[in-house]
Image 1: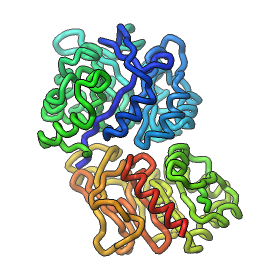
Image 2 (image 1 turned 90 degrees about the vertical axis):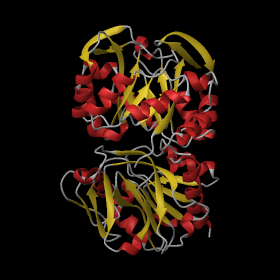
Image 3 (image 1 turned 90 degrees about the horizontal axis):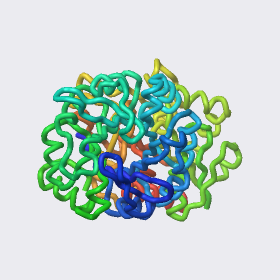
Length: 252
Length: 210
């Protein structure tokens, strides 16, 4: 059995690591590379760097961050935000990223996933889905940090990106992001039941018990955490110890 | 001491170079026959599909070079696709011939036999050491060390004595690293496997030093 993953998610604006609530109201939380190094030392399984403002400028400005991280952090690195062309993917990989997370571009042009998978393989292409609940049964995918609603119903969209060849899904709940009140368990279990590619849940974790509940109630493959570690509510090491205590199979 | 990383224009090798350099090794990324054969060790990296990998090796006329190096008795490490291409064939996108340096084939995970039906196999998993081997390549690594994997195909050596470690994915045991004299191959990515991966890389670098 594969180990469930604890991933550090570092949203970056200009040269700062930032964190918001519902993907908005961004506050500085530190230097992205110092944080990445710290989480690496604490035993985190992967790092995701997300350019929080790329969507507005149509570009990803994380090259320096990635270059630096790949010299100090020997675990998988994912880059997201503003990935719109094959050249963007190539540049991210050349700077030391292992995977890219794609949201807006995939929604506007689903073929882009297919095209990039053909060149780089599905293991390299993460479909980033920002989901917001509209009513009791429906969630929709959003772009531009949760500002723009799209026509994609999330469960259908998740199945579609799997068909297109995406290697995994980074599922962010806009409703729960930054709230520290726990994950959107219902959404996570629905999506992870519907697709056979790994699903990483992002948004809402405030304490280890939230992750225990998530892993016990769904077939989610990993969690991407931010506030809890940025604000030092719990360290990566503590989260993992608590998961192990609850018989959740993570890397120690 | 100099270690060559084979440049055949496939995938990203920056992390690999960074990992080697962080351990104090001098590495060169090269596709030059003489430069490769003059090196103390060779790493064949690989991220991409099997047919594309072989095609690129052929395009740059590197198969002969790789085989020469493999026969030189100097340490030779194949990583992921770089390991798979050492075998006779792969069933990725049809049947394709490999370099036949180690006997055996590369197969797709039999998804119907997995009790967890997700591919690719992505993430951290344990490498269980073959007790018959007491390889220096595994020096200072605890049994069942966690390593990072990303793949849908696995190598199946014809001779089980070539198995260095096995790993269990979803109830299915597969060969996660192979050894044949000076040649070692790993399905996991040591350059992405945190501290354990660096120990594995350090062992390889030290073997190149000897």
